[in-house]
Length: 179
Image (cartoon, rainbow, N blue to C red; front, side):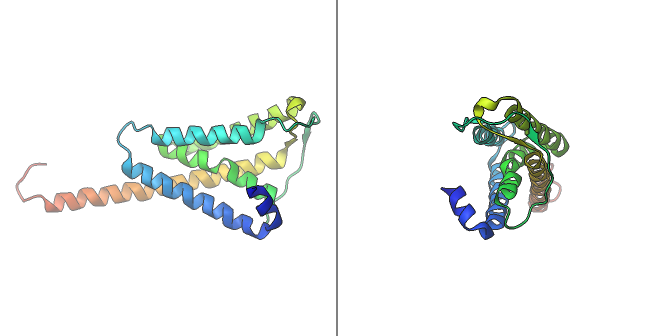
């Protein structure tokens, strides 16, 4: 249903992408605030996001796909629904994984590798009825970069807010009191 709406109203796709990014940043910020050391919330959100990606990309379609991979490269544009959807595909998983691990570069590499793996399965298993396309990988990777950037900015803001809270608590301590 969402796909049909976006296909019929392609001008809404950039807005949908922005809303996904903002929602991930907001949920991530809330999880960081609520989280305690060793909290499993962010890893669980990352895992659920990856599971959704795998279902969306590897679930059989009921038609037989061709072996091989379409090699092409295109830039995302406002009216290119599929390209922008691929940008959004891995973004939540990357944001939550980066917030959970605090390792944006490692998650960036893992996210791009996951996309390569998905495209390889699509190319090598025609029974699922999916087709491999280099545009999918490149747009997924663009989404991974954006997601890692959003997570990095979210972490920086969360760390700054925590530092300000600590400073405010120190200012409220009576002088001469050990903390």
